[in-house]
Amino acid sequence: MSPVLQKIDGIVKSNKVVLFMKGTQQFPMCGFSARACAILQDIGVQFQDVNVLDDEEIRSGIKEYGNWPTIPQLYVNNQLVGGSDIMMEMYQSGELQELLK
Image (spheres, rainbow, N blue to C red):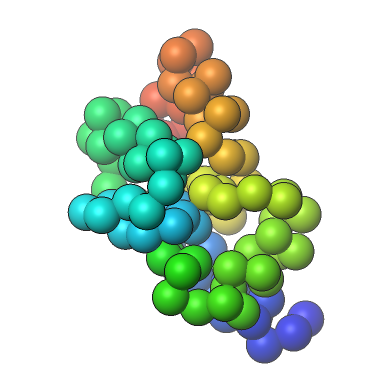
């Protein structure tokens, strides 16, 4: 595993809920990241944000790590949940709230 993938793996494993996103919880830098944050904040879950705009290696590495082409990416209990579209579908069905209990 490359150093950047090891770094990402460490972040994922040391946080119950992690959102790799453009920007931060306080200042999302794209609509998809803003929507992902809004969903998590509405549920009331604490989560670690990782601003991929601060680190180009993480920005490209996260796509390889999760084998997922887009950002944001939500990880819960070391598992990739998906991006903002999947999060919205799961939120609307109540599935995301169950996962985050």
